[in-house]
Image (cartoon, rainbow, N blue to C red):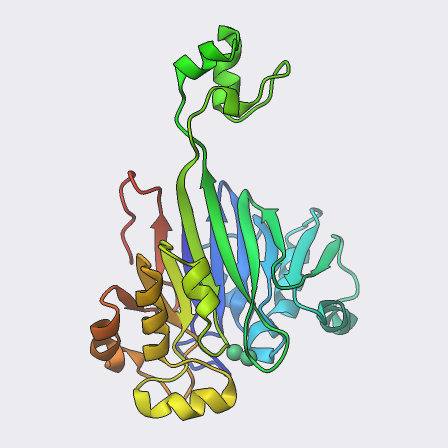
Amino acid sequence: MIDVCWLGTGGMMPLPDRFLTSLYLRHEGKVILIDCGEGTQTAIRSASLRFKPIDSILLTHYHADHVSGLVGLLLTLGNEDRTEPLHIFGPVGLKKVVGALKVIVPELAYEIILNEIEPGCVFERAGLTITAIAANHGMPCLSYGVYLRRAGKFDPQKAVRNGVPLPLWGKLQNGEYAEGFKPEDVLGEERKGIRLVYSTDTLPLREVASYGKNADLLVLEGMFGGNEKDERALITHHSTMNQSACLARDAGAGQLWLTHYSPANPHPEEYAEEVRAIFPNTVISVDGQKTTLRFEDQTRGDQK
Ligand SMILES: [Zn+2]
Ligand SMILES: [Zn+2]
């Protein structure tokens, strides 16, 4: 399962009750942050979440509302006596941006490993498979797909057929390798895992609908509400709430969480009826909102 918490849902600039964009994903005790807007560390405290398990930060792009929380967070991680390396991923320009920010936090006791990645790049962090998807924001910008794989069920007949000695069954069933045998020797077909897509600061992306086909959760931007803002969204390389709802509908997603509201959109819930007419399972996210994504035959988590 994956625990998800919205640390901030604001775009461009923070409001008194709305921090800038950041998402906290926890899987098996490790945490991935996506984006790190101003106030991210305060939002982590407000949500009673922990800093220590943060393994990686995925940045979509380098507009200030997505990276301005990084300096404070790096300092706080240092104050927690961190020694484990921190992995930061982002599009081209990452080394320049983080290098500049590090000028004012020069003495960190842990290593920062920077990974400049291209669209299409696939990598593993915190037991999750991450795919970078090209966004359309007028500058290098990535959306991220996150997938938690699920192994097949244990199949004792297959284990016998493959000649696996009985004492090794448990190990292989747990995904370990032993004495030349591999987990697939005792497991059936891989089952459907958990898929999440995070895409903000972009014109509507058809790739989100295709990569996020039947995704459990799409996290898309709700910069503007109402169809009359389509032109404004086009000019600024953003999406409207309605456009994001159309993508979620086309993807056949389980849920859509909207985020990254413009300061000029202080009450996005006023558009709830309009977007739910397009995609009924739309959540107008607020800061601190949490959910747990589970495999399909497990009990679904409650939203708070
Ligand atoms: Zn933004
Ligand atoms: Zn932006």
